[in-house]
Amino acid sequence: MKAILEKSSFLDQALPTVDSDRLAITAYGSILSVTSFGNAVNFRVPANVVDSGQVYISSDDWQKVVKKVTDSEGTMVEIEI
Image (cartoon, rainbow, N blue to C red; front, side):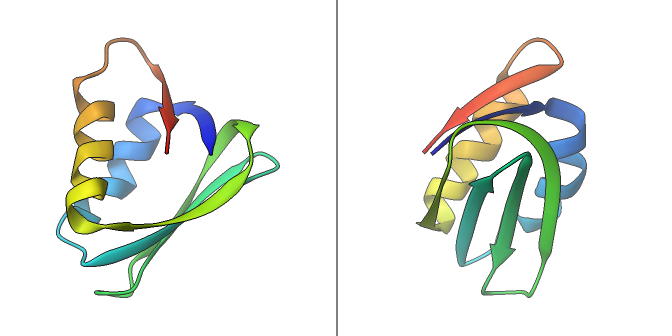
């Protein structure tokens, strides 16, 4: 799964979910959707989806994704899981 998204839009919604236990991330069409199983936090952000798909990830892996986005320069960021 690979998507390009706007950094601040993603982080505004992703930061409250950093401590989530398990998550599902789905990229399809022009949406990246994140669903948390631990605290029932869900969100969607517009994205340029390069490779659609769905993954289930652990809290540690989710924290790595959020850190990569946080540390990236520029307004757009590519995530690949």
